[in-house]
Image 1 (cartoon, rainbow, N blue to C red):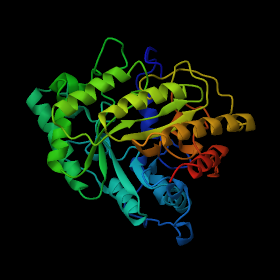
Image 2: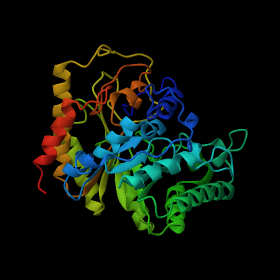
Image 3: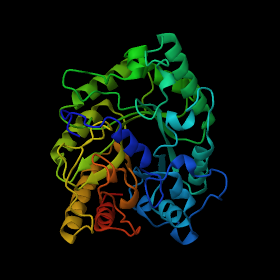
Image 4: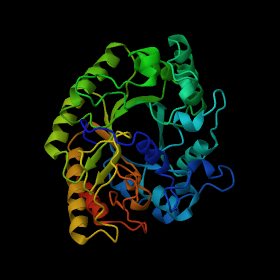
Amino acid sequence: MNHRSKPVVASLGSIACSLALSGQPSVLADPQLVPADQQPVPQASPQHAKSGLRHMAPARLVIGTALGPGDISDPVRAELIAREFGALTCGNDMKPESLQREKGVFTFETADRFVDFAQQNDMKVIGHTLVWHSQAPKWLFEDAEGRPLSRDEALENMRNHIQTVVRHFKGRIVGWDVVNEAISDSPNEYLRNTPALRAIGEDYIVKAFQFAREADPDVELYYNDYNIEADYKRPKAMRLIRELLDAGVKVSAIGVQGHWLLGHPSLEEIERGLRELSTFGLPIHITELDVDPLPRSGSGGADVTATERAGLDPYREGFPAEMQERLAERYAGIFRLLLGFPSVTRITFWGYDDGTTWLNYFPVRGRVNHPLIFDRQLQPKPAYHAIVETLKSAPR
C-alpha cells in the first residue's frame, strides 16, 4: 500500500494474511485444521524430475514458492509444486503464532510436514519468520493489559522462541527470515513502532540475529521487508543493514518481498533499489513475488494494516486476454531485470495459483484477483510462459 495511506480496518489485513496460502479450494480454510499426521507426503513423479521452472533457471538462481498445508496434502498441487519449484516457504506455519501460540507449548507438526515434503522432493526450505509484529502471540512482548514487558523478560521470551525453533529445524532449513518488516513506512519514523520495539528497544533486531546464530551457526539469516527497493524506503533499509553489519551480526542475504503492481513501481525504480542494496556485497532474495493487476488506491507493498473498504473488482468472470498479455509482459520485464543482477540468487513467488492468493483478501476482501502464474484450474497462464522464455534466453 501507499506508505502515506491511512489504515481503514486494522485487523483485516492480518486476517487476509493468515487466511491466504491455505492451499485449499477456498482460502477461508483454517490451516490449523489440516491434520498434520494423517496423510503421506506426496512426491513428484519421475517423468517430471527435470522439468519446470526450477530446472530452467541459471544455476545460481533458485525459484521457489510459498505454501499452505493444503498444497502438500492435495496430490495434484503437490505434483505441480515439486515439478516447478526448488524452494519452499511456509506461508503461515512457521510464524510465532503458529509454532508457540501458548507460552512454552510448541506445535511443530504441520511445519515438519512441509520440511519432510521438501526433503523428499529435493527442495530447499526457507523459515518464515522468527520475529514479526503480526501473527505473533501478545505474551511475547506484552502483559495481559497490553503494556510492554520489561526488557529482560521480553528478551528472554524472544530468545527462547527463536532458539527453540531454530534448533528444532537445524540442518533441515537453509535459512531464516529472522526479522520481518521492521522498517516504518512513515516519513518521520525509522523503525515500525512494534511491541518488540516498545519492550526491548531498537536493538531487538540485532538481538534476534544473535540469538538465531547462537542456535545454529551454519544456517543463513535474512532480513525481509517490502518496498525496501523503493526510493522512499530504501534509505532506511540501507541504514538498518549497515547497522546490523557494523554490530557484527551475521546477515546472509537481504530479502526484498516484491509485492508489486501491474504498473508500479517502474522497472527503473526497482533497478535503482537493487543496485544500491547490492553495494553491501550480500545476495539479494526476492522473497514474496506477485503482481497485482487490480485497481488500488495505494501504490503496492504488503502492510497488512493498510486495507481498503471497497475497490473495483473488474475480473470476477475471468481475466481477459489483453490483461493476461499485460501481466505476462510485466513478469517478463521483472525477470529480465532480475536475471541481470548476479546478486539475485533466489526468486520466491508468494503462492502459485490465483485461487489461493492472499490478494483475493488484500487490500480489499473478497475480490477475484489474478496475480500469479497459474490460474484457478492450476493451468499455466501466459505469464508462466513469458517467464519460461525469459529464463531460456538467460546466460547459463
